[in-house]
Image (cartoon, rainbow, N blue to C red; front, side, top):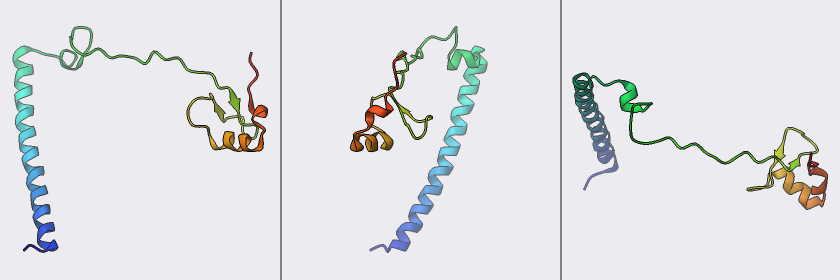
Length: 107
């Protein structure tokens, strides 16, 4: 039966072998990619995207920002939209029954 010390030593040895093998395989893969890039006269734009490259289209978030509905009376830099988990200052105002004091007037 192996001891913990022996198993940890084997683990360390395996991790070193994994790192070395990964480094070698990455070097081979990079060499293959470079050869293909050179052979087909590809640019970074061709590979990673741009006007000419086809493939994945980057989708932007179309949600608009929601204006805040509450402002901390103690610190005007802290606001809350009323969505998601309420901040501690909102929870404290709710507990004290003073949440109305934090409502931002509609413009």
